[in-house]
Image (cartoon, helix red, strand yellow):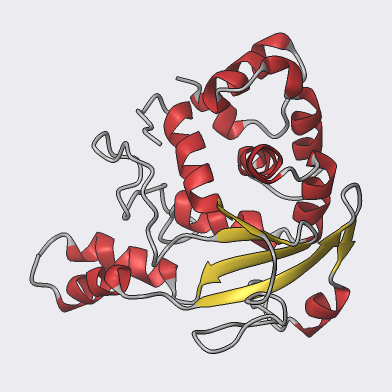
Length: 240
């Protein structure tokens, strides 16, 4: 168990810290220093979410850690959005709860949850897109917590139906990379009216100009990445 990692404001490069991170990520300790450095340079907390994302995009999509660090610095909404669901609190003063049952001992398998999960897509090895469900997941979590008192509660049953429905997504074009540098989508940022609002949306019929017309695309379920990291840090089983 490594629960202390979930509270670290920064990741040191000492052997003990890197060894703990390596154990969680099933990674060679020798390659983690640049990933930890990149996570420390991001904006906002919790820092462990940034570290998990940077590692996943590097390992699964070949994105340079410094590029992903720049993405998260430019778009702190990504970590905030993931933290709101993966470390659920009904309000600012509330204790952390688990309405979606992510951290129960029986939830060992890394199964996508269509109505909740977010993705980062790398299109043509250049364009970086963030996709998240358009439903209000915070209200959904509150309904699940309140409704457990009665299996006949209407809000509870509606929340369960929302989890089973086919999701629509808000898609944001974050920018693009040449492999070593991230070029921020300032146009998208300037049009955003709310902190977590998308400036470029997609639904079943439309999308970003290149989102459905490409030679290659790598999609990373970043919600699963975060869940797996946290479960391992808490000493819970993770089966991929």
